[in-house]
Image 1 (spheres, rainbow, N blue to C red):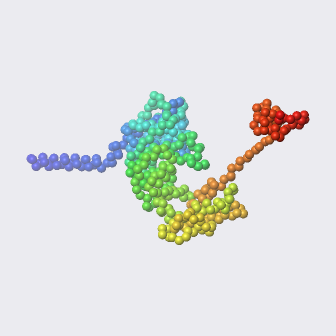
Image 2 (cartoon, rainbow, N blue to C red):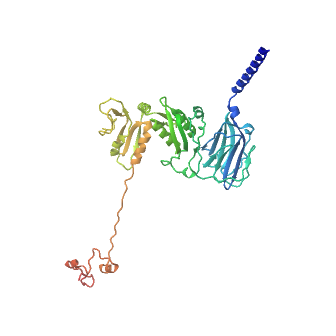
Image 3 (cartoon, rainbow, N blue to C red):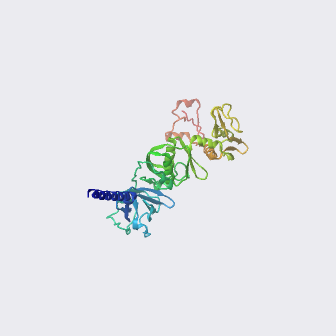
Length: 432
């Protein structure tokens, strides 16, 4: 009897272990995911709010895109459920023109808010994730599921941006697939800045980014920037290391350049728009194999002959350690002493044509645009100063009535008696 009871206990224990193993085989995300209960859009004179209601709090990230303008909200750890097929009614509510939502990934819900232009917004979280935008009008509330309208839309702050800081390494899988880094919010420039060049004329400002990295792999960081900027960035084989950085509302290209510079890396953009990130050494090696091109640059105001000497100092050099010997400056004439380090050879050349006041520049194609831009910047018109003078003849006797006695002889000034003066008509002496 004792043996039979012991066998029964073993059977129950084995069954319990099997049930536990079967339960643990299911992904944890199936039980930990929050369900989207509904979406609400309401607008009045106080502002416009897009709210997403969930059964539980989840992480959130948002970023903006242009062409067309839209705000993208990602909710990792959430599922849509039965709301997947619901569509917006198409009515404009403040800056909001349309709202789309989909199960971007099995564990990520993506909400896309189409807006009428570059918009500033604030984001708050919890069981109800809110995107608040400035501007609105009295319109009917649109909602799906269990989303109920609030009492009143609060005034959306015009200059406040809530930023969730990422404290962990950005997932390389997310960065490679084009998804924004988790818990990072990006902000586009203010509308007033959209028409203002950033840095140089004719170049639109770059989208601004706010993000924090703690010991993140540099390749993941670069991939995250590529995803945010929607640019193709190729990383060299020697690029490695970890990044600890805290970027606060900076243009993405400036932030990336600063991060790369701190790691001894550089980025160059190809004519086709692809950005290549590599070490300085590898870039110099590539540049030494780049073919030369020739271009004629007309000089309008400066003297081409004197300008040629200055431009030669900008040409690409091939520096070989221990090469020694004289430096070659191409066929454009002798290089000034000290302008080229010993062991470096100038690849290109500059020749001046005095007849047409032009420069014949021979340089690698990747550097030609920079050299020409430098020539344009110093080829400026010399400022001219015009000096005009007017001489007015006035009767000297009447000048005393005007209170003017400076350097003009009168009857009260003794030194004019040496050369007496007389009135033209009466011949009466003036200096008496």
